[in-house]
Image 1 (spheres, rainbow, N blue to C red):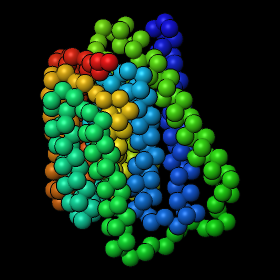
Image 2 (image 1 turned 180 degrees about the vertical axis):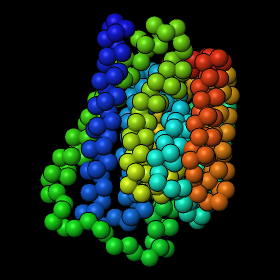
Image 3 (image 1 turned 180 degrees about the horizontal axis):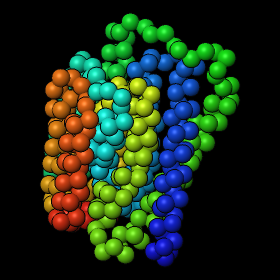
Image 4 (image 1 turned 90 degrees about the vertical axis):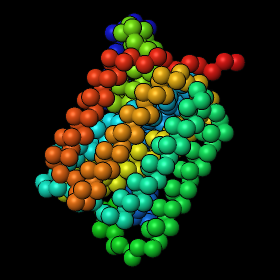
Length: 325
């Protein structure tokens, strides 16, 4: 595959990925309505799973095809871009400062910090084994159960959607399945094109995974945040990002390690995880100030993301290694 063909394939794949992820999320939300699922599972868990579906498909496919550097770089890089680009854009597009729910922030923040540190500890020895991936996936299941339990403690909320406005169940199922198939296919194309672009640029695959692939697969979160903010639903944007951050580490990195154990160079681990945790802590700290997300806080996060990118290209961390057989 030529360089220009690879670039063209990646561009088309990212566009298809964003559109199909939108169908997937829309279908998942309507299915949840049909099943009378709790609102928090619709807003945080189901939307979070839907918007991180591209990251999951790309990372697991990359791991199975022997490119763990793309798998881990995509998962960690997506957290950075969710916090440093998607969420700040929500703050910038919002009509007013986005209020932050104190209870949700405290519980989600603690869980997010813990899983980030656990993942860093697991990768610190140079390997993220299948058993460690299983632990991360187990933490993801605990997160789902906790979200459901927390919702049960809250008073029920009325569903604002009129029955007559809903699509038929068959139409919803077709939308969901079509989106899912599109996400998987376009993700496979991205993984095919990535090594070609990496070689042509003379960069390690981890850089491509941390920048191009991670940023591209974060398009659904970026779009969701902007649309939610413009509609005055900034809280949905914040919840989506917090959920996506947890999912990227627990579900996506964990599932990738389950698919194929990841062997990691120390300089890659010592670059990716400290930066990710620094950006996450900054985001949570800014949210804690006044329990709101204003424009100036969004600008701070964007600047920090820019510093991260500059350091990434100046440091040029070594590529991850494919596990030996």
